[in-house]
Image 1: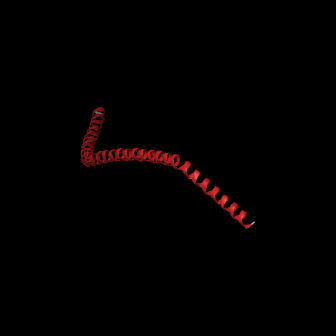
Image 2 (image 1 turned 30 degrees about the horizontal axis):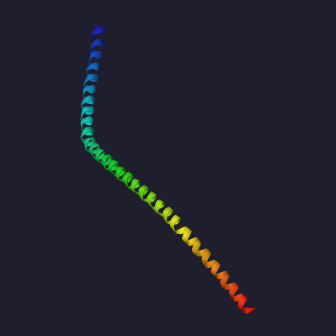
Length: 112
């Protein structure tokens, strides 16, 4: 008889535990459903933001490419300008200096 009473107490304790576990499991399901309902729109917003950022990075990459091409063109134009103008400018400066020297010598010769 004592064993039967002990077994009944054990079975009752297990039944209470099972009922509590069912309540906890129901709460967990509700929390999971609520979490999913709140997270789904946020995930969609994050996905849209990531796509927007990827588009901006692509545009920035294009702009950097264009800036590099412009820089290269300007460098080429500058080098060509220096090559074209440096020789005549140097010659003009040499002629001007020579003319000044000649003018000084002529003035110095007139004074004697």
